[in-house]
Each structure stands twice: as structure tokens, then as C-alpha cells.
Length: 341
Ligand code: UT7
Image 1 (cartoon, helix red, strand yellow):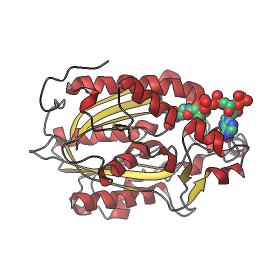
Image 2 (cartoon, protein in one colour):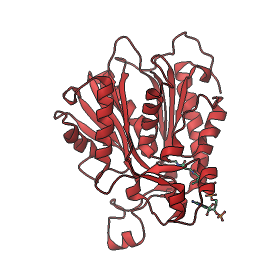
Image 3 (cartoon, protein in one colour):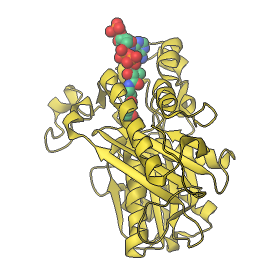
Image 4 (tube, helix red, strand yellow):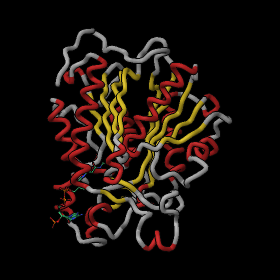
């Protein structure tokens, strides 16, 4: 569904003070795990992984490198681009399904690592949609609570919850982090609109069942592999395409813009076939679609945050360009956002 664009400028859908993204940053671990290396671990092939997913390699964090370390490195790069110091940050939000530990939250650990003040810090768990959920929450603190500077991060060490003997999942995921600095700017409209959604009826499709109150960690839960991520790939695939398309169309409608006005579409990087199906249904050209999946695999909450940083730093988007971000993940959760960069 395309909407007719009415205003020369895209419509702003938020109440309160406008919220700009003044800096972005990302970090991926140095270690590369290629498809050829995976061929030696499980019964798979570069040909299968490439044609079924589009992934060629992924990054794997060191044993001593945790989600908070990746997050802090991405945050420092975003702060540098925004030209701010850690003392200026008023709120820290981390989206992740692989926190350093169940508690304390990873945002508190990031606060300590970057040397921020004793400002509020909390995590959001909305799987691969987490960065978009965190953006909307951060935007609301700026719009309604008069916070000046919010640090939003999507960060994952998925290698820590990957079953390296399960070829259905171990070829898909990677580690990394992406961050954004949100600030109120009277003269620009950064975040124009967001759409978020969830369907708990489909929670079983994608989960890590162990380690919580339902299946606390025990010798048995470990023996049963409940501390590993598991996924019904086919069902997840179908739901992903449908939910991402409808969220993207809804957010474009709210801004009263047509897909042709979007300079860069940043879809969650889970599978090249999902990205292409979503792009095709939205009427986006291949040139509009941002893809870095071949380098990093699926990095869950970090995925669109890393992609946003790469789109900006590579010059694919310039100040004033419109960006559409759309994501989907466990929960099920989904989200979409239009940003005027
Ligand atoms: O980030 C959150 C959202 N996540 C997603 O959106 C992921 C969604 N799902 C997917 O991306 C795809 O469903 C997968 C990439 C996970 C799987 O692709 P598929 O085309 O749905 O394959 P399939 O599950 O139907 O498996 C086809 C065959 C099976 O063999 P049989 O049963 O036909 O004999 C699998 O056992 O491929 C086999 N297979 C593999 N073969 C070689 C599964 N994994 C592998 C592998 N290498 N790594």
C-alpha cells in the first residue's frame, strides 16, 4: 500500500519536543567466522548458507569480551560523532537478549564503562526489534520529560547462547553493537514516527527457554540445551515478512510519505530472502535497501543499529535524507521508524 505524499516535508508524528539523532556508532569484534570455517563444525556448506541466508561471515566476541564491552565501544563512537562527553548523558538504554547477566542490567555496566554520571540506566528486551523499542522510549524521555541527551544502544553477544552443534541456528548469528545519541534540536526533526507491535501468541517460535523462572539453570537444563537459542525458522520467516511490511507501511502512512521519498531502507538483517521480499512488497528498489548481513549475520538488537551507523558513515545517507528502519524478532515483536537524518 502506498500513501500519497502531501507535505513538501515529511510529517512529524510525535507530540512534544522534537528528537534528533546527533551521533551514531558501532563496533563489531575482530574475530571473523567464515562459512568455510563453519563447514568444519557442522554438516553445512558455504553454498547452502549463502543461498538460503545471504550470510558469508559473522563476528565472534572474545571469551573476555561481553555485551557491555561491545556496547560501550559503540557508545563511545556515537558520542564522538555527536561531539558530547559521557557527563552530558542523561539516560542510558540498552536493548539486548544477551545481557552480561540477568541482573544488574547491562545499561548500568555501560554507564560505569563509559564514565557517565549516576543517571537512570535500564535495559529493554524486545529481541531483534529492541533497538527500535529503545529509540521510541528514548524519544519519549526527550519529548515529555525534558531529558536533553539519551544514549540508546543495541548490543549482543549471540555467540554465547548459540548451540554450535545445531546447523539450523549456528550459521545465522553474530556479535556486535550499535549506538545512537538522541538530543532535542529545535531546528530539525530526527525521529519522525515509530510503530511498535508484538504478538505473544507466537512466543514459542523463537526463544531461549532456560535460565529464567520457568526453567532455572540446572544440570538438567544444561543437558537439555535449554540455555541455547532455538527457532522454528520457516514460521519465523513467514511472520517476519508479513509483520515488517505492515509496520513499514503504517509508519510511512503516519508520516504521509511514499516509499520513493525514502533514501535508505534499513531492514533487520536476518536473511537476504526476507530483506528482498520486504523490499519488493514495499516497492523499494535494490538501491534503497541497505544490506550488511553478508558481513555480520543476524546480530539481533544490534542489527539495524550497526546498519544505521554504516549507512551514515559510508555516505549512503546525508543530512536531510529520510531513512526507514524496520525490524522483527522474538516475542514476536516488530517495529518501524522513519528518521530524517
Ligand atoms: O532475527 C529474528 C528473525 N529471524 C528470522 O527471521 C529467521 C527466519 N528464518 C530463516 O531465515 C530461514 O527459515 C532459515 C535460514 C533459518 C532456514 O531456511 P529455510 O529455507 O526455511 O530452510 P528449512 O528450515 O526449510 O530447511 C531446509 C533444509 C532442511 O533439510 P530437510 O529437512 O529438507 O532435509 C534442513 O535440515 O535445509 C537443512 N538445513 C541445512 N542444511 C545445510 C538447515 N540448516 C542447514 C545448514 N546447512 N546450516
